[in-house]
Picture (cartoon, one colour):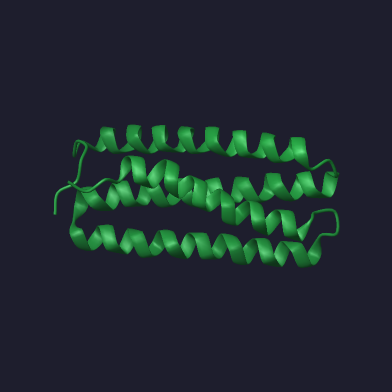
Length: 132
């Protein structure tokens, strides 16, 4: 199975940084749009935490996938599973956080995380992990 992009280690880092920057841009735009609609501080805090967690998990996952695809087919699939585990851990962490913090809207936090992960998948993984 072949993948696009160069196999140079520096190109993997550059691609991961570019993907992370694009994901951050998408996250910022989504957060700004949601903050314009939802006025309460609890809602805004939830949105920011949810999107930030989605970006962190997705950026780490894409970086791991880019590294894995340059190593071997097996490494790529381990990175894929690891990325799924990172996202699940992010969701679990946010669920625990909503039980302990009253100043954050649980609904906004969890919904922004779910939609943030979907937006990051569409932005980063579909652009930078295309199969040939």
